[in-house]
Image (cartoon, rainbow, N blue to C red; front, side, top):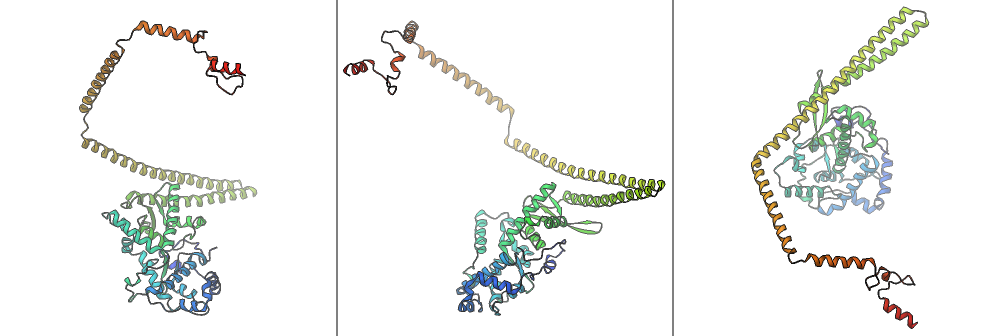
Length: 461
């Protein structure tokens, strides 16, 4: 069950502004405390409770304290509030148990942020954050060994628990703003993966690579049960997906208004093209035409109903006038539908043209490679002649070997031996092999191989 109030209206330009509307009032502090005390029974020990609520000074010997509070915060996010981000002041407020405030919790949050187990909005909007955590996306010349080394470090940092080398961080002058969001990095990545897969599915259905952000948000609301966190902090998630080069965010100006759009990137070097902007303009035009069609259909229905009323009142002329208006709106609708068909065809033409250009480039590359290889038909002719000659020579050799092997064989003797074999197969009583000599005996369980030996055994019995 989600304890957050889901957003049901399109997101504003700033996810932070909208997220501030989300409330944690669906669960009281008392209910939260009860859940925590039940889940972490160790807090019922007064001595342990005191130790965990003491000050935190970023020391290695305080590792257990850091891990304990990280587990509690994760439990807030994963089980109590069903989110991947909370404001600092909300975390501090809900962490007052038995009317006692954890003195060191603010420093613990700073330390977890330094470890990047939790990150802030500032980092999501900082390009240097992505260059440090995803160097393979930004440094094309980076070696594989360096890439895997950075990945291993990233995985290590993402594990629950703290890095014992905490003193490597410079904690001087570090602080977190009370209204700042603290985002669980791993949960954010998992959620963004779900969002990206959902976006890919939608665009696959529509056969596009671009979508209007407003439309994507509406799809999230409509089918939000397919994604755990729905459209929570959507702007932050899209910014993160852009940072890891999964998507590109761009604006298209339509009638003086900026329309926010999303494009799925094919690779790290992919960018927004004129084709993408044109498709967005066409999609917006189609949406506007569909709205006009809906309005016209209402007018058709309205005028038809008016015509019926006029007929009831015996006003034939009035009924005809309303029917004419209904017909006019029908004709307008027909024109709008034709426009939509033309615009959709234009999108198909753009995609086909792009495919043609891509095919042409591939063919040109293939021709260039063929030339670079130096393929020459005359060379193939020479090879073919050599192969034919070798085949002829091999056949001649095989013929000589066969003739040599057959020398000294007397054909008359072979014929005589063949006749002898034929007589034996007929089955005469001249001691030749007889099939009956190999059939099972009376017991049906043995094969008799020696007739004379079997007869002697019978006489003895």
